[in-house]
Length: 253
Image (tube, rainbow, N blue to C red):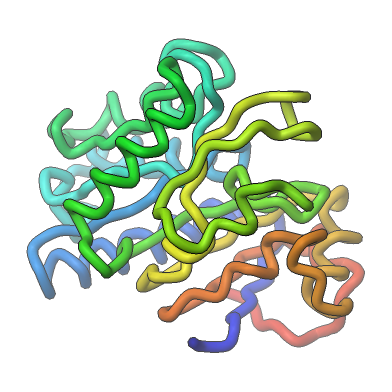
């Protein structure tokens, strides 16, 4: 388990551009090493900006990307229990901003089925992950961080934090970003099997919790993002606004 690497950049746009370079590098390496690249996408405005950048490349400069989209396998870190065309769907956002705009085969996209029974959806997704990865994990996981320290759909003091066996779990969240709602999420143990985890944070509204996460006492139940400790690399890309309450322990990208 490696120590987290924190990269501070100017603003939210720079966070997306930094993530773009790391995404492309991870994809190139994985495809060269083993013929495919597996990545779990995240919801939220900061990942959305990354997806928009990724979508531009194949359309305007098809030779720019050092990887083949046909060898990319798309997974999701979490999903709201809504149909795939619902405005709250993480899949819908990723599809509109990225997946429908790049030459990736539909069978390479593994969607969490938010429209069916949550527990059945989580079970099916977990079985799919087991089939794909066995006892291994994803090449890259993209994550964000909420103002309460949650990541994916791992919310403070929620039942999903206690999951130790399954790769994916469904749970009813009392205090989520969309109110009381069912969520499906990758579990902490499975996330921590990843070769690389990239956490994207932007905005001064995240500054207080980022300081608490980085320099405060360990409180994994109250700050679930502290539980993300992958066997591979853990990289944070944060903008100056989010980093404003912390010291100079990072370097610029």
